[in-house]
Image (cartoon, rainbow, N blue to C red; front, side, top):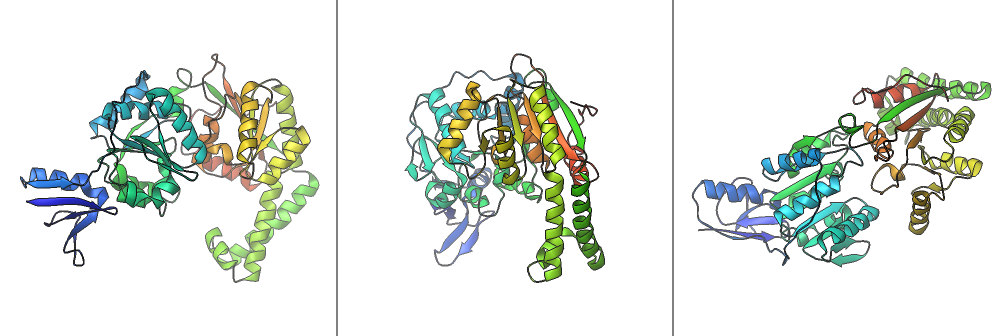
Length: 447
């Protein structure tokens, strides 16, 4: 008879099975816990009798919730069930991924762990789960190590404790699942024996291509619906307004001088940006070229004309909720000082961040300015106007920012402004982030 056991993120077995390799030190075959489900299915299909001592599930009360899903959420959950309770669901920001996951937990009705990228998300999940299930929720993160039938953990804590937690849960849910294939974090999925796995994200693809690893780690993409399909009925209708601004004569001279210095070097050496970055550590001229590119980009991102355009937008939408997004903290602070708008950056202390968001929610503040902090993982109060003063070519960043203004409220149309410096690299960046995904783009409008 075959015998299966769990040992620090691996499955040990006394006979040869798929995915297992002989471990001479332990005198048994060993496989990553990831393959527990596959091994059990192989043994059953082969008619091999076996003793299974892998899972050591936490005692679990009956898990019930009264959430009623929308039609697309029902389809998402059904698609996951049909795929064997494996795989990822892709829904836009604000489309209720959390509700789908809670319904999945109730349906499985067994110990479940939710793994999230930030402490803010951990606290949001904990509150929502307590509200829906009325049970005490365990926490792994922020210095806490509390194990319960439903536990929420950060990716960092789950990674550090994967060997310990790996056989305690029947269902593992990975929020913002695009983080999972990152070096290190993939070990969480590999060391967990959980036979049921659910990934949630608004942005499945990774620029480094590692999202293809998700098929191995938790199963493939089982359901996806985009912003355009939900706009109007379940999310607010939106309009994109692109505003092109001119650099001042002084800014233009400085921009062209620096960008020319950067281009001259990479063309002379016939290298790309990645190679330039690698050379900059050992080559003084490469470092100078890289700094010249940075100076040119900073001029384009932080131009005076952009701030004048922002001033007109703020006046035009006086009294409405506005989120302003920038690439760098320096521009955040500049906008905050100039327009007396509260800010949130990665340096903002947690209490101040929560206070600013709460005041924004209550309408005490009508606008808030941020760098990348609100792109992911924070529950942002309803806003109907978004302004992007600077950003990368990442479609993920763009989707997250657009999603921040799409929560449906009083049938009000959301507006996303993008302010771009003419005849700079920003124009190409704008095209890159729009081209793959957005079809519903309005013509340019003046404000």
